[in-house]
Length: 165
Picture 1 (tube, rainbow, N blue to C red):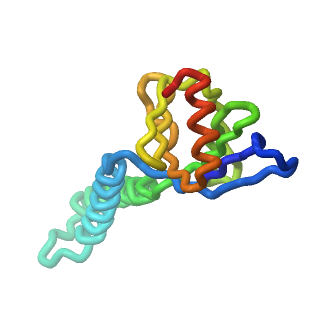
Picture 2: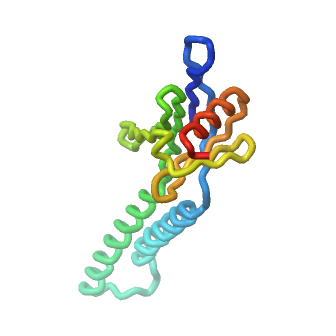
């Protein structure tokens, strides 16, 4: 969820508008799905070593099966745990300070805040109500869709003043 802070209006109270955040491609989804699938496969393989019919029960084979199953299960659990998606960052656009704030909640409950001034952006693109804000090294910082015409004009004007449109 994102918020746009509008102080340029004649009222003195702050006004926030919820704006959804979009992702650019499905590359992370493919990698995380592959990690999850590989993790589950390794866990099933670790269990399958012990329930396989007709296996040799000698001491050296049992020790090898134990080490292999513990390693496979550990790697599988680790891959499955790392495949969980992080929460999407909240995007706050402050028109007074002329900055964008990305707030991401970490798994431990703390927040990671990053601030980017409009002047520090590499570029911004506008396609109808859709804004794409680019940071350093052509990295997409945020994509927001603003439906309110006053907020849209205000953000577009601020980005034009900063020379980013």
